[in-house]
Every structure is written in structure tokens, then in C-alpha cells.
Amino acid sequence: MRTEFARTLLCSTLAYLLCITPTMADDSLKSGKPDLKHAGPLAFTPDGVLLVGDSQSAAVFAIATEDSGSSQKTEINIEGINQKIAAMIGSAKEETMINDMAVNPKSGNIYLSVSRGRGPDATPILFKVDAKGDIAEVPMEGVKFAKATFENAPESGTDRRGQNPRMSAITDIQFNAGKVIVAGLSNEEFASKLRVFNYPFDGTESSTSIEVYHGAHGALETRSPVRTFITYENTVLAAYTCTPLVTIPVDDLSGEKIRGKTIAELGNRNTPLDMIIYTKGDQDYLLMANTARGVMKIKLNKAEMEAAESISERISDTAGVPYESLSQFENVVQLDKLNDSQAVMLVANATDSIDLKTIALP
Image (cartoon, rainbow, N blue to C red; front, side, top):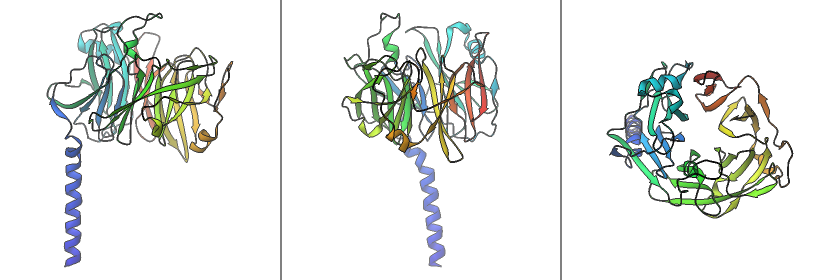
């Protein structure tokens, strides 16, 4: 009797805890309308809360998607998704920019951050692609959300390259073990930053200046932002333009100026666009899309990365951790892991349209 009672009590308690966990995670999110000025880099918490980087506001938004159903379909192929979105919002395709893509781990649905128009006055819009391939705008009225802001973002304007440095205030976002890590630029002398926020947002932030040795340029750099990054076994794997691959321990992101370890130079005149990590058999891999050097596949091993020599002299071509070029993937501009065996990609084609497609992880 006592054993049966104890078992019943335990099961009831577990069921209760499972039921209240999402509510507890939502306690920091308040209903309203997020005042997004720009929808840029995206990421998700494990609970399916969407993180949106807003460079214009110098802020990160956490938005409850209420999207927890399991997706069964594993193949989604949409030709000209940018054209379809442009038609939905009454915009020309050349004025409709897809800024980032992320897969909700709770549902398998795909989220896109979009700008209608160009420049600081562009309208930010979020879209969801479900398992059927249906595209829908994500409503922003009466959603639960929270907002974390930061100071010292670059001023809006035009630099010597004709670019607006403010749009690089946030270049990428990742969620890691209860923290939101944000890459981007500041207006300080050592401009390259990795900012870390507690999640749920509680006003706590550390801002660490990152210095790296750039082998292709033969110099130490502090003003070039991380273009894309991911975390692997509590280490940031960060890629920069022209294309150093750098490791930075997450535990070192405490607000001081630090130097990352350059473990590879992957080629000049190239910008990394996106990266994912996946496992095949017993081996972990990094998959990285680039503007000029296609998609790269790199074997990952924490011990080998730690033992690798840091590049500290000029490199004329490539060096360091080896990589494999995957010629079957061309013009990939965004990618994310869909499940344990598949990824989803945004692929640009010759007609200036962008296709969304799923692929088997190589």
C-alpha cells in the first residue's frame, strides 16, 4: 500500500512539475507588442523562446512563440521564398531582405527575420514556415516578450566603406547554458565585443572585448566583428571575414579584454555566413557557409582544438585545422540544423530568388 501510494505521489509530482515548467520559464515574459526596429540575427532557447537581435535598438528580444507542437514532415522545399514573402507584404523582392533563419527546437518549424525595405527605416517582420511548407507572418500584438538592451553601440551613419556600423551592433546570437551570447561591435576603441546576458533577462550583462590575430592580414585586430559563431563544449567557435576561425572559452567572457585563439585561416576575400554543429556516428562536425568558399565541413574535437597551435604569423592561403569543401552545396546564404539527420538551407539562385530546402547532413 505504502509503495503504491509513494509511486502514485511521485508520478503526480513529476506530472505537476512537467506542467509548470513552461509557465515558470515564461514568468519573465510580459504581454504586449515588442517595439522591434530591426529583425536581425535569430536563435532559440531550448524551450522554444525566439531570440531576436535588433541592432537599431541595441537590444535582444525574447519572444514566446507558443509553438511547441512536434513537426513530422522532414522535407520542405520552397522555391523563391523571398518572392512569396514579398508578395504577402506587398513589397518588391529586391526590397525584401531575409536577414536570418532559425529552427524552433520544440516544433521543428522554421523562423525567418525579414526587412521590408533597406536601411534604418526598413520595417522588421518575422515569418514562420511550418511542416507543410506554409508561410505565415508571426503576430506581434499581445505576445509575451522580454527585452535586454546594451550601451555603447556604434552610431548610425556611413563609414569609409559605405556601410552603416550600427547594423553590426549585433552580428550573431547563441543561447548557451542559461546565457544569451551576442556578437557585434561597440563604439569603443576595442570595438569587437561578445556580450553575455543572463536568461531570463535580469539586467545582468558582461561585455568582453575580443582581440584576434588575423593570419591573412598579418596583424592583431580588435575592430573586426565576429560574423558568425556557435558554442561547442563551452567554447565559442567564431569566424571572421577573410576568414580566421577562433576559439574563445565561454568562461573567459567576464567583461575583460581577451585574445581569442586562431586555430585556422580558411581563406582571404571571403565572409562566413552561418554555421551549425552536428554529430554523425561518434564524430562531431562544424558545417559553415561562406560567400566565396562555399560550404566547409570541419571535424571537431575539443582536445585537438585545445592542443592546436595558435596562428600568430602571416598566412598566404590557408592553415591550421583542416577542412573539406562540399562542392554539392552552392550559394548557401543561411543554414540551421533541422533534426539529427537533416539541415535546412536558404540558397540563392541565378534569378535573384532564394529557395528554402532541406538536405541530409553530410
